[in-house]
Image 1: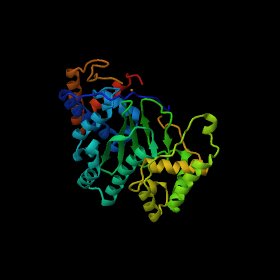
Image 2: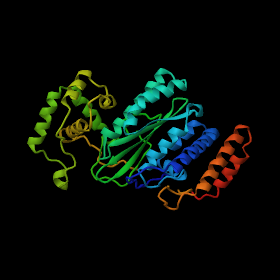
Image 3: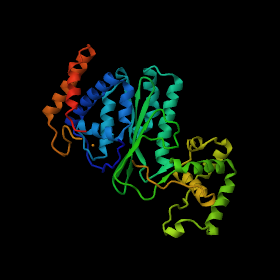
Image 4: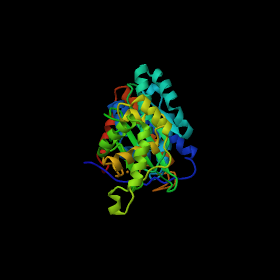
Length: 361
């Protein structure tokens, strides 16, 4: 059954207490290790690409079900928990740390024996996922957190988060390796607080023709773009917003003309190549969308692409305070299960499976 819905992720001040974060590191390691042992690292990545599974996982290890820290602290705990020896590592993080993602990919990639080509592919995936959710999708939630979970085979999942500074709410974006296109509905899901009214989504399937026109316009002389914008602004062409009394698309004030002239020189082959260029930001993407819709009549998507479980309590005592003894006992049981399973004795894992049958879906 396909699942969809919302998760409120408000900005909460403060930090995860040390006594809780240390336990989150230990418990998350044991849970991920069991999944990897039972099903392989590919299954670990697939589950983390599911926004709903991720939400449940963060609650199981004890963080707030409805906090923006659900993303940042959970991935921070995993980054400390996992190492090359586990066949899984986390790179990136919050704020400035996210900028070190390419260097961390190189470091861990070589340690895990990945080829230079595979490492470059992962670095490209990191760059494009961030660029698309920050520029191609304009939903009012600029990114401030970017992480990747990598396995020893060079597979990856991207988990990143943006924040609406006015609403003090966040939304989380999930990507999984093996996608066909970085600019055509590439995500596995988005978790958000609500549907936004005015969202420009150039990564939607509906926007395909507008993407093609954007590339054609850029491949032509950028001087013509200026004339097109001026022409559309002064002619007073009939558009649907005149009938709905809602202005769905407004021309941005600032356009990076230097980037457009550079793109003209390079002659990008497709939209993915175009938005991957340095300097092609939200305003430029929006300007090209403006031209595609207003001048050429190409449809642009204005639909927001946005598509849980308590076990041990949350740090704010919701729905109950964290039971420290139960938490530590859970870690101990999982550690024993890992040790015995590694010796070929899977009785405890079988017991966990049987217990799972009694947990309501």
